[in-house]
Length: 388
Image 1 (cartoon, helix red, strand yellow):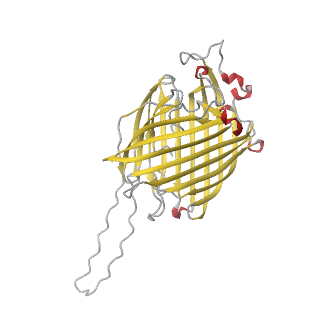
Image 2 (cartoon, rainbow, N blue to C red; image 1 turned 45 degrees about the horizontal axis):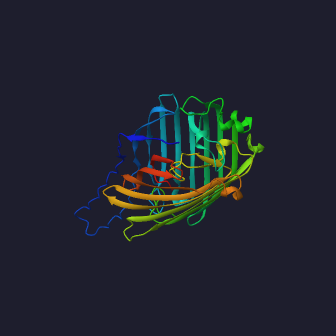
Image 3 (cartoon, rainbow, N blue to C red; image 1 turned 180 degrees about the horizontal axis):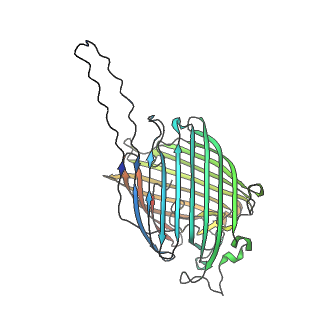
């Protein structure tokens, strides 16, 4: 979903530690033993972030985000944990409440990350499925959905984690609104959602559990200078988990970060993403191409299907003070099978953006990106943190 945000206010609230005075020895004492300095504990930070946005499907929207960053204990080799709490509401009574987190426990013995979100009357543009959908097939769909996604991983070697992940989506009250946008399909040209199985327009619950293996060697998970990231994971949705649809999802996410200068002011970041499905996949669970993370320049869900592969890269360069610049590009495709990737033409995007570093110590950026896709599509994106 594309948002046009105006940043209103940012404040940084940090807790301060009180220094303990060193005791002074009495005059009668000839020799004293110096007290070993205690490890300095990092101060947690909390960034409240009010936001405003506007788009045709929502009207004026307003909300706020809170962005805590912290480290458990005083061991600086343990990477910092972070979370994000976002809530907004619109003139058309649509709303979102979302909590996401990445937590490294002491010693990085465990890594926990996930999301809990509730979208109320959430609007999306739907174009059908497949790599060759027509822009004129756009229709607007609204629904309510609860998403719970949680991964619990245990470290078995330096930077290597294995464990389980669980995902639940509870989709309700789907409405196809032909009159939300001008040019939406009419009775003569109904939404392509009606081409799907009627069950997909009813209340559905999808519940999936599966293994996950993750190598995370990034120096900083919020904005990486160097390191590698490789995720291989899957979900198996079935009747034993009370899922209305039986399908399997397999995920590949490989990233590489390389400084191009010794001072770390220029970074090359690359990412290969694959999402593959087996079984009967409902429309909302299909792989989506586009949005503020994968191939910026296309509307999120502009192309969706059972299989997806995308490759993207960006060069990040420090400009001055807290400002960084980025240029990016990528290619990708969706299809019912891998052999159908030659249909509809390869999807390519490119663009540039600006980063403002609100939290310099933790390298937490707010980003503004403008991307252009093949076929004349484009998008302006505002988000917290890097795309990958």
